[in-house]
Image (tube, rainbow, N blue to C red; front, side, top):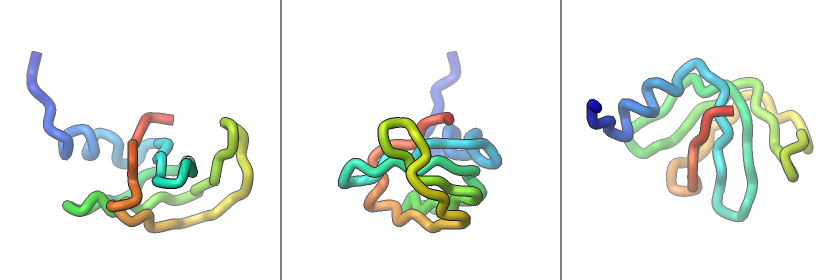
Length: 74
C-alpha cells in the first residue's frame, strides 16, 4: 500500500464536502475549495452543525488552521 501524506489527503478532499471539527466543539460542513500550508481552509456553502443537524447556514468561510481539530469526509 502506498503511504499517504497529509497534503495528499487534503488534495483528495478538494472540491468535496467535508466536516471540519474546530476547537470549542463546533463542527462546520461545506465544500472544501482551498487550503494552505498552515491548514487554513476555505469552505463554500458552509453550515454549522449541532448534534449532526444544521444549526445555521454560513456561506463562504475561512477557517483558521490553528483552530482545526479534524477534517472528515461528509
